[in-house]
Amino acid sequence: MTAASDAYGIGDPGENGAPDQVHEVDLVIVGAGPAGLYGAYYAGFRGMSVAVIDSLPEPGGQVAALYPEKDIFDIAGYPAVKGQALVDALVTQASQADPLYLLGESALELRHDADAVEVVTDAGTRVRAKALLLTGGIGTFTPRELPVGGEYLGRGLRYFVRKLDELAGQDVVVVGGGDSAVDWALALEPIARSLTLVHRRDAFRAHEHSVARLRASSVRVLTPFEVADVTGDGRIGEVTVERVRSGERITLPAQTVVAALGFIADLGPVQKWGLDLRKRHVLVDRSMRTNLERVFAAGDISDYDGKVRLISVGFGEAAAAVNNLAPLVNPAFGTVPGHSSDAS
Image (cartoon, rainbow, N blue to C red; front, side, top):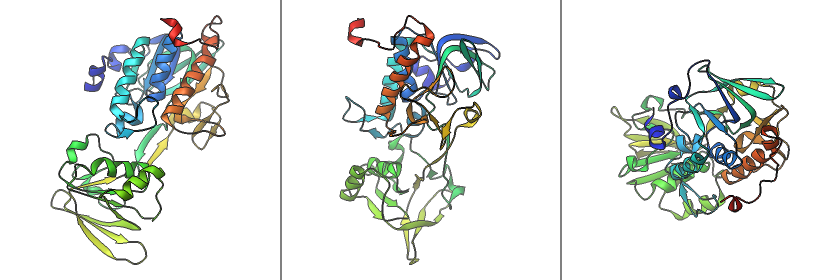
């Protein structure tokens, strides 16, 4: 059992099932990120039994794995909330549904019959359900590597920051121009000895409000620059950056380089299930149905015209999916749930 799983009271996958064991539930959710956790809670609210499958060893998906210490600003009711605090609250909320967690297992195969679907994991676990909700975010993800300095991985080079305090008092160089790079720079600025953000273009791809905060901060912003060399005695000691086109070089003291260059997403076996896809996303209609019978999708993995990829939007999509799949679970369940305040 992982420490995180133990803290949540969530059993280890080995405790939940053995290879070839079949679990029967009303709804199986693939993906334990924010949308999946909220979907588990909401399915329980609608009277369904739930199983949640995720390849990561703890719930929370990309938020818990990559951004646990970052502030999230677009969650209703929270002016700001740390990623891990949001995940903890979602797990507590989902516990009302008493979901079966199958963590550290990847959904490998999807089978259909007349009145159910069955998901088989890479551990041999089988989950039979009346419906399937895909909330797998971007799928499995690996960071885009910094072109130089790879030999310092784990010795100053990192691709995300689990705990901000680990970098307190250090000279930190953040590389990248997207939301992650700007957010890490702003989060680390108050505790780092020095903070430099290096981006190969003058324009940033981050949210305008965040870029404005960056420009008003004490962070040293070097654009358009690229990392030319990383040196040190065992661990990173200096980073040399080079101005694009002119070749001007600047050497910066650094004990840590945070390479926030984005991630390469892979849907893995899900791509072979026969789902209609658009650029690695699963196409859905207004009821969050996919082209496959009894299969729905919500959150970042889903796509439709006008899609906005926000955690807050994913919550609404998960609720919409659960309400629309409810009659498949039990014909007595309507798609209109009533108000949650009426259930007390």
